[in-house]
Length: 135
View 1 (spheres, rainbow, N blue to C red):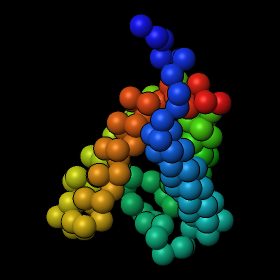
View 2: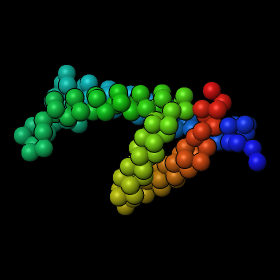
View 3: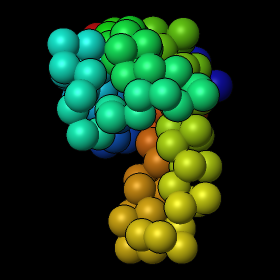
View 4: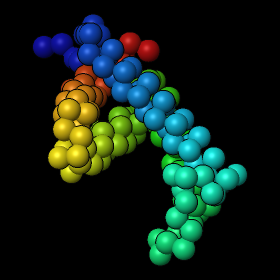
């Protein structure tokens, strides 16, 4: 019986690289949106002044911080970090649930994202250690 570390990396490491890239891109876009909300809180997406759950400025800082964290997790996932694999599964699960909830609003997009999240979760859980072995 051979150990898992002596096996060759499979094509599923490409899915893990894809998941990493998605995390980096979505983190960057989230951080940019947060930064724009901080410098211009009258931006139409963030025009919620007087809302009971916070101001555009506060949400801007939140999105900037979350975006930077998601980008860091994406970079760590490319290196095969176990912590990053765990967080990537949690992020993909949250995305899957949120798109399942919005299934009736955007059915084709939601089904596409749900399918992609299922593949990413499966690839990271089953083949995540191959990225570390390949690196």
